[in-house]
Length: 136
Image 1 (tube, one colour):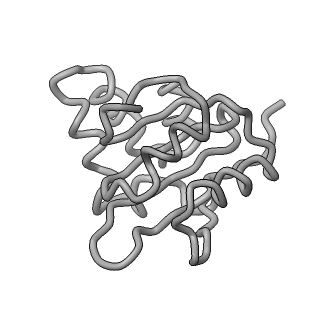
Image 2: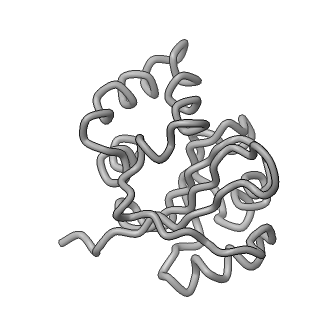
């Protein structure tokens, strides 16, 4: 699942290093750290759709994702150890990720739809839908 997330939403020139870091336990934090200040260089901008404020309610984000075709379960890459590397209910993942202060990517439809919350520097953190065309 993590390989699919990286190949779907990360820029091609960083995919190899991010995958290496994700699958190396001592370096996993490096991959997640790249999403703090460098997410605009790391993620494919053409698939990023900013969620306009107010956007800090996990229930509102859940409803938005469901309208876009999200499944009720998801897979999370996150600074939050409670959800990182886990498959869980989408609502539960959002409750941990939204407002957590550090980045999370929550895959809602493998390879096609995800939620990304960047690091909070000041004010609300940037929040995005990551959406690509349906895979055939």
